[in-house]
Image 1: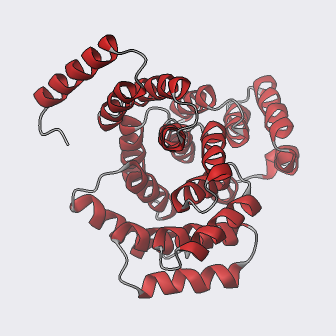
Image 2: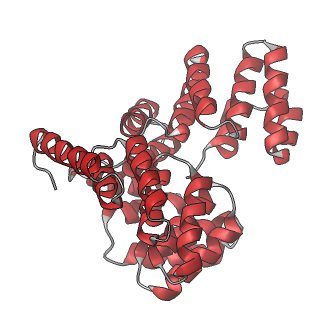
Length: 316
């Protein structure tokens, strides 16, 4: 939309003037929010959308826009609330269904994710993104055959490289996934999702240096991406660089205080470093957040490094 940094500055100055001259008009805040979004200044964009909504509380487009920003800020609960507001008035809004469904997936609420994503697929049967995310959700609840059927259809179709990579990744065809994601990067599509999933793929392929670089790019693009910090910590753990691993996990926990796996991993780090008190404290927090982790914490002395992928890698 804006071809140069100078154009951004001119546009921002114009929008600032608009807001100053007519502070009760939500359009000025909305336009400035869109500009901040294009600059990846998501918190400023969110602040302006909050102001716009305070002036125009019945405008569903504003809630849709704010929900997208909440996604960029990794605020899944707030994003779900905004998309729910949209769907309460417009239940067939496919984009709201897909966004909310994927946020449910990220929050490990897989049945709710499946419900939204099925609705999205019903409304748009050929929507590759909707089908891909539905298949990933079905996989999480053990409906493997249904998931595989959907993934196979996507892989046989003329989909874009990212969606082919996504399907290949969940089908554990990691070499194919790597090639598809790399194709996206080579074509100039350097989104956070591409780097994130290529990073996960590189972990599976044991390309740890490349994985660290991919998650590093995620963090540069989205400093609130707690999962990228977590995965950096996980890789550093596997490489036995424990102090740096703890630093990354501390960042993940500071961004998401309810990240059970992060507390578990930090506890394991402390355990390996023979700091039993700190380890037990983190295990207790992990189990309080997610009781399913109790068996892992109780048997921590029997865990070997080769077991860790099945416990920790978060396919978000």
